[in-house]
Image 1: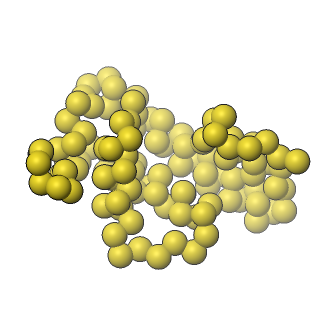
Image 2: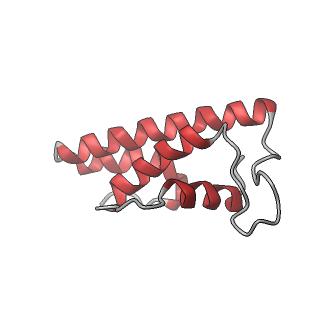
Length: 106
């Protein structure tokens, strides 16, 4: 499970010098960045510690990587549904990414 500080550090690193045009593409882009960074060391931005994700090892790391892959896939699908004008289907996919934190459609 990703701890919030580790997640923030990876997202911060992934969004450096990037312009986000809208929230859906920003989420998808961030998830893709997280997928590519999950196995790399993420330094503490304050310089206090080494890799802030060092707690995530073995099966926990592999499981987290799989979850990021799945979330990225759902984000891609949500954007595709929205482009097709199927907002209800897009909401379903975003709901799979964000769980109870994403509102229901309608």
